[in-house]
Image 1 (cartoon, helix red, strand yellow):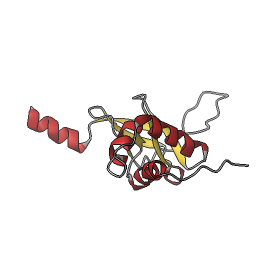
Image 2 (tube, rainbow, N blue to C red; image 1 turned 90 degrees about the vertical axis):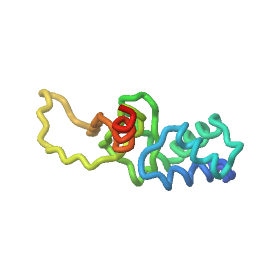
Image 3 (cartoon, rainbow, N blue to C red; image 1 turned 180 degrees about the vertical axis):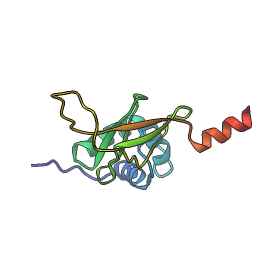
Length: 131
């Protein structure tokens, strides 16, 4: 039987931030945005809440090349991302790759993940103005 956790203002603010996001968020991004609702919210509480929501099956962890785990609702779980080299934000993308991949003999594909690396529009514009 699954545990039932009490709903607190802190947990609800974390949940609301993740639901409203258009991309997977790192814990520090969740903290920054959730503090608009709960100014006293701490990073440890954010991490505990994210773990709880992952364990409850509400959130999926997104682990990309940059090392920082990101979180998104399971119903929006993506397998392809654009990762900005400048700001480390991850943006879900639609990757249309052929299903005919040349796997070595004996290999079985379980899941496909695609990460494109580059610079997002905001960072590109900031670099253009600062250069």
